[in-house]
Image (cartoon, rainbow over all chains, first blue to last red; front, side):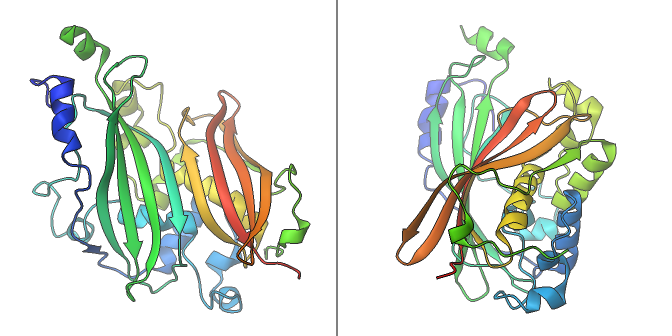
Amino acid sequence: MPESKKSPDEIYEEAKKMIGRETPPMVYPYSIEYESIRRYCLMVDDDNPLYLDPEYARKTSYGGVPYPPLALFGIMGRGSPAMMAGLTDGSAEEPLMPPTPGKFLINMAQEWEWFASVLVGDRLTMTSRIGDVYIKPIRIDPKAFWIVLEFHFSNQRGEKVGVVKNIVLCHRSPEEVAAEL
Amino acid sequence: MERAQLFWEDVQIGQDIPTSYTLKLDATRFVLQVSGTQDYYPVHHDRDFARSQGVPDIFMNTGFLTAATGRLLTDWMGPEGRLCKYRIEMRRMNLLGDTMTVKGKVTGKYLREGKHYVEADLWCETDGQGITTPCKATLLLPSRA
C-alpha cells in the first residue's frame, strides 16, 4: 500500500515490523483437478502423458496424475479460498503486504522447493508469510523496496509439499522520486 | 508421446539439455497464457493497459515462464525424475510478437545420502532481447545402479 506522506525511511521502519507476519492457513476450496492441468499444459504445447493420460500416469511411481511441479503456486496464488469460490470480490480482504512508498510492483524472482508430490484429488492448504523487506536502489528509485513473500503448501494429510518465495520489487515513479528531493 | 526415462549415469556436466523448444508469442499464445495460469492481471493481455503502465507491450507472466522452463525439465528427466529446487529471475520481458526459445545446460551432478542429483541452468531467450529469464534447477534422478 503506497503511503506518500511519510518518507521512505519512515515507511521502511513500519514495514520491517511486519516481517514474520503470516496469514492463517487457507484451505483451497477444490481438490486438484485434471482440467486445470490440461489447460496448464496446453499453454506451452506440453503433451506429456504423465500429466494428460491417467492410465499412463497410474503405471508410474506416482500412481496417478501428478500436478506439474511448477503449477503449484498458480492454483493458490489467485486469492483467498473465498475469492476463488466466488463468495467475495476480495475488496474486504486485507492483503499481506507491508507499506511501501511506491505503487509500482514488479515480480522479480521466485525460489521453489518441493518436499512431496501433489496428485489429482489432493486438497491443498496455503499459509502466506512476509519473509523479508529491504531497501536496495534501482536506477530510477534510490529507495526501492524489495519484499520477500513466502507461500507454504501442505496437503490434506498435513504433509508439507512445497514452499515458494516470491521476490517483489516496489518502486516510485521518477516524478515521485524527484518530488522528494 | 511417452518420455524416455533419464538416468543419473547418463547425464554429463556441460551437456546441453536436449529438450529445447521454441514458441511464437503471438496473440493466441497470450490467450493460452491467461487460460493456463488464470492470471487476469491486464498487463499480460490488454495492450492499452500495458502501455499505460509504461511497458512497451503485453508480456508473458511468471506462471507462463515457469511452465515453459518446467516443460523443458519434465520432458527431459522422464516420469521418475523429480524437481527438488528451482529459481527463476524475470530480467527482461517476453513480449507479444517475440519468438521465445527455452534452453538449458547441465552444471553439476552429485550423490548425497544415497540420492542422485543433477543441477542445471535453464533460460528463456527471445529474438529481440536475448536471455530474458535465467533459471536454476536441482533434479533428483533414478540411478541404473
